[in-house]
Amino acid sequence: MRTARLTACLLTFLAMPAAANDISPEGSRLAAALDALHVERLWLADRDCDWQTGAPKGGRTSTKVPHSASFVAAASERLGVYILRPPHHALANLSNAQFDWLHTKDAHKQGWHEVQTAEEAQRLANHGQLVVAAWKNHQPGHLGHIAIVRPASHGHQHLHDYGPQIIQAGLENYASTSVEKGFSHHPTAWGNREVRFFAHQIEWPTEASR
Image (cartoon, rainbow, N blue to C red):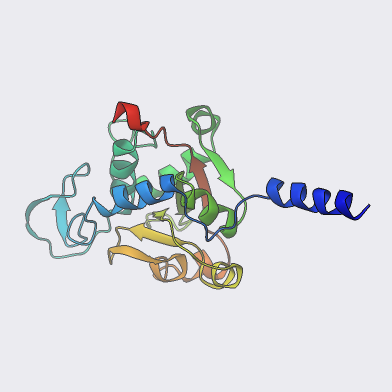
């Protein structure tokens, strides 16, 4: 009887999803790919920039315009995943449009699905899936915000309080910060839990094909 109970406990443990703070080899590859984008020196808010590379097109601008949607579009493209981007939508108000698009049947057909919790969003990123954190600004003419969840080792309480770890372009660019800090220019986004998470599998090349 004891052996049967131990066997049952072991099978239950093996069937449980991996913890959010475990980072798989695919998660490490995702982190390296995201770091290679050099977001802290490209897609800068005080520059007009090329949406695919983040490279500035000229000198500094008089006002700051965040390029969060451009960065997410460029990163997704490099990872082989489609998210709404030019030429299918203009750069203007793209973050709000991406939020709306991610809720559509078209996005689902493309392979996106909504993730219900911050812990699950972090777990999927840690296992090499592309996960975005998106918030829509419902004030007409005002920009929303979108970022990519990056692999990180955080416990349940940290994820509840501060959200997953993200990489973003915005009014400030961060290679690594929390959702709470990255979305801080929009207090209701994380404060009222208005941020939504969406995930997509990445087709990582096998060692033989690299």
